Image (cartoon, rainbow, N blue to C red; front, side, top):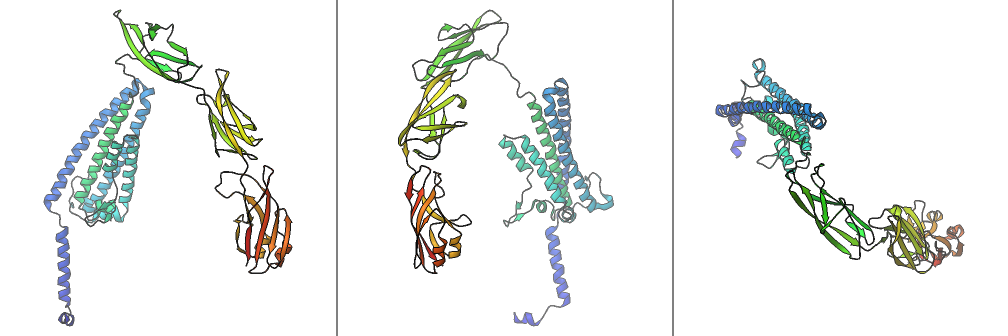
Length: 509
């Protein structure tokens, strides 16, 4: 090793080493003539496929136009979509065609084939990367392919399998190489790629575009009659106004054929009895729960033979009931608004009436009510529903009345921060007041007023205070490291009751 250091390479040796490296790189990048010929064969085959697709598309558009001339109202919107697909397909197809021609011009210059079919410099490894990557044209192509793919995927909304097919077919995602490195789509397509290979891959995209156009136009053409009815049998149908009725309420259902001949009048039978019309009505009786019935429709055919079409149906009978939900709590509190949601299944909110014994009721609309107890103990809530313009008792409930729980006393600074203990300066205390309320997150909301409290300052004396303001005189006598205590804090709630609250400790700093 030391000898090598003492005998540096001559300029001639350096030149030979460099030439060796260049030769090795050229051999590694050399693309055989057979491979290039193979790309040419594939490209020619793809052009044949493209010509076939264009012929099919031309026939599809002609058929579409013929259908539109017969029924423009039904076919017109789908034909407009097909024409939009045609335009988008042509735009991307032509853009890729120009893209190929520009690359061939860079490789063959004045000898370039204007159709990019015959390529002299088909083994050129530089021009594709220069045009697509250095000049940023690859990014533009990627964006156009993405836009076309998104348009196609949107047309197949709801068909996940089809959407996934086109996500894969027109994928421009990064490519992972053998070293598990992510390579941008543009680099994988164009960097150090022979012109012949690049042109063939771009022709493949053109072939996919035409094939996709064919499938999309066929799909849109099929949608023109997708909603048409195709009758191949006659069925009896029961169409009830509602399958859910209250006891005493009328059940109503229409019995019809799915295909009707207006020149023939069917006969309707339910449980063996003939109906006067197609309307079947009854008054729900004493049997609660599921009730089933069956019957048949008899219809004479063209040959005079009477055919029977059986049917079955059911309905549910329920006791009248109301759904009462206390939105905030399981009990009611005296002195505050208690929010309730009250509804009756099958009855509109405007046909529901709510009353209470031992409380006032305020209707806030949309099934929302505010209930305020006027006594201790319990309150009773009753719900009336109007059915067919007749009032019906839907039930109710009983709720316990509880007093409001004791709130927490705290100091509030100018920023609204709540403080129940800690260290602070006299100056900060001078800008504070005492308040009482419930901690954040509590379901109950109520307003309390501080009635009185006692301030006890270590070395500064005692002050009895009315209201919520602190005694500035006692504060001015406080010294650093001394304790200040707020005791006997009395607050009055919306229920008019006074409560003695917690003690607050503050250390002067």
